[in-house]
Image 1 (cartoon, rainbow, N blue to C red):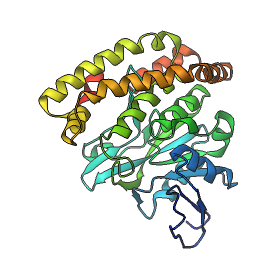
Image 2 (cartoon, rainbow, N blue to C red):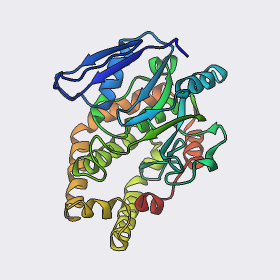
Image 3 (cartoon, one colour):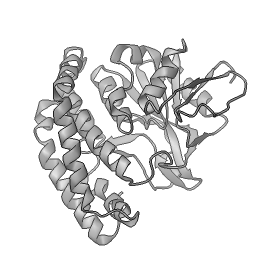
Length: 303
């Protein structure tokens, strides 16, 4: 496949990175603008029918883009397309994404054998580490929310697209390898804060009211399972502690995320009203969609 262009967005702020190759051009930022803002820059600089987002810690198979575009051409009702993202040849990172009752999103099939996910199927939304988006969908629903900066912007975009009636297909032949969390580090302070804050942003903007009112209780249950996982020495809470950071920092990060969400609440509520005013499916349908692609809170805490 040769009918494509590559836009590399250098978010390092140094201006020293060098890029070359056919169909390739670069956008160099003077500071780290965040993942969503960088992808949005590339989208706005192009007129392509599709936007393929690829993290800098991902290596794509030679036929990755072709597989995604072929699926997109064959499924006009879908606006998002998920890759088979692998951690290694025999270990999966994601085959689409799942969502928990508190708005936490996790990778479908994470840590499992990729062979178990060899069938094309509908999923909730793709991991933004390696995904294809339809321009028509992005122009209708809006681009990545740049206020997220890092993490969960793919969740927010995916849910907004679902409210607008767009589907998402998983394309198992679109294979990439993901060198996981190279940007902010696995279970780092930065990651823990942004994941928690952006989870709150996401549910305020996108969850139906009935589910939104239940999210604080679901979050408390997840915190409980994180505590159990910490005692057992597994999961992200244990990984955070094993990285040399006291587990007692985690409640402080949660409070910081709550404060940031409260400060931004008026804008989040305006964005919520806009999403609901332009939605094409009913809240009952949206709830069923989330239920069909859910992940238990205990499983979230153990990953």
